[in-house]
Length: 417
Image 1: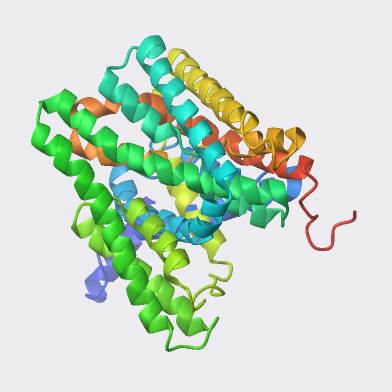
Image 2 (image 1 turned 120 degrees about the vertical axis):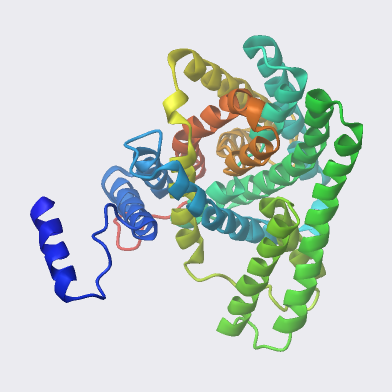
């Protein structure tokens, strides 16, 4: 690089508008190249090896992140996190829009399945973290709250990727959406437990969970009302409605960040509120065309780079694997013991496999806690974050396997049957 630098500096003597010779690539340019690398990795794995594209996105981020080759340092990653925050929020907005609360009220067995698998997952993970790993009760509860949720975004994207439709697909989508919603409530309560354990501050232990839940619900409901009011004046299914939906979602993200309310909760609540309040079907047929996969590339590349792979050792790896085993068995058992009257056992087994992916919100929930107690959270949150790292790679494949075994997927366009 020395001859190039010397030539550049020689030109600076004549061309005064030239900037100093750059010592490193601009962070935005580096991030753009990483997204392209993630796209190419995902497409290669999907077309050549039959793996989920999501695996490629996560691998590209993990290799380039601080825990890999270090192409993205922590400062650049901190700059990229709000973008990933928005991507996750928009995907959860779509997830919330799929959550039909009226239908759930009529189908109580589905709600029972979601409550059973989520409760079993929380209890078993809490017990494992407390008894086997030795975490304190507060941080054991935090670990359980962070990792109990399934990943509705992964299931949604996997279903789209494989053009899956049917009972198993629909049940898996709904169960993961409900599981995600339940985990948000539990996470808010756990914030109070952590406050009480770490600081003995009962005021914050009570007010902070209320602030998170009420703030997320309030922002989501208000922004849903704004979106419906403006979109009602536009043609149904038009680009204008898509723009309004995205713009108001970005408004919700900005307000949530300003008020220190989790973005993922606010956007999920906005999606659920849209589903519940849209009686005139104003936005019912408005979708983000190909937008899910654009968001997925951003989200999973960044979350891959955020994974603490540098802390992965044989002991921590075994602990993370143990957590995933007890979590997986709990979720599988919760699905199998419920819903006997409306779904055959063979399909319930596939649903139990399909809901295994661990939600990407685990990374962002961990970040929320780390921002509050940075002095202790690094080690305390290592277990759930490493579990998330392992399941980011295995989860999409498990979900894809379940949908294929159910016979609900279609081959890619042009493929031979």
